[in-house]
Length: 412
Image (tube, rainbow, N blue to C red; front, side, top):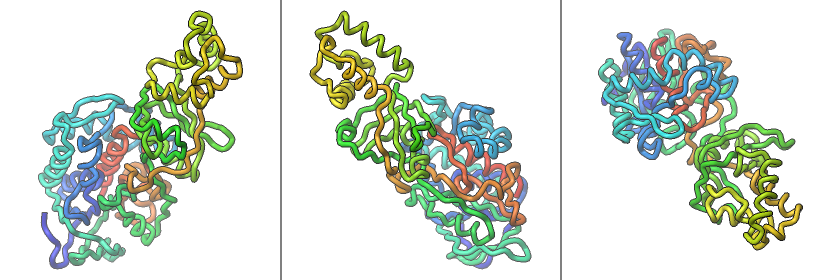
């Protein structure tokens, strides 16, 4: 790691030494380009180090159209070229070549065999260095201007000139890692459109006392959906749900944070028996009541649900102390609603300080999907979270960062 000192000149300057920036610098340098990789923090790749609980979920096992669909219709279509040119299997091979074998875990996730995010970061740094890229840390870019030769950058360590510029500055999530939205300003000043940004993949805040009292409970068999005001389903997730003292966390609720923030709040629908239709469940309960009449209503609920949750659902339905023999049709209907169609209001997530990614960013309409080049500014490239791209939990955002960063590096 070096400092700038006097004015420096490079073929390619990459701003931001996160996942996308490291990939861009590596693949640009591999083309024998003189590459400077600038990082504003003393330590590059801070977000890599803290991801996945310090283990770093590098990518996913999903592929093809299934992989693209995880980002939504518009974003998935934009990412198609990048993801098919550098799919998860290629990312896995790349890391193996860097000395970091990956292993499959639950929810189609791929982690380093060592279970250490630091191994991932050190491999990426080693790959960039071996390709010939030069990393400069503690280098904060304050201004980006177009020049006759390409771009002139003003930094706290002096001026830098480049023929091509790759912006990989990230979004606004986990601001303590350095992602403070600098790239949005640079892109706006260069003439690009930046869409509204929202916290995504963040825990949800739910102001319901009964829910917060379930703090610590994890449910793996439930389904959660975010609804429009009309009741129409916007998105449904069937992944683990964690009850917290703030509301809901875990993969499924966090996947919905961007939708909640975008709409300034919405209703969530919880289904604790998603494999059984309401009518079928009702008939099952009627049959159970005939043979288990002396048992309490809680006996009707799926046994895989934690006891504290079963009790809470019965209390919400006002049948906590009712036996099956005493259970009326209306009481059974209330309990069915609590199990199959429980709705809670969620006005916000815990925000950018707790968000894993940012929804929104540089407009995809202004970026070439095949090169990550700006359609407005010659020799400018944008990649990673800076773009209006976000995916669910499970390695999808690292995957898109590596794939778009690689394209930017190979094209710059």
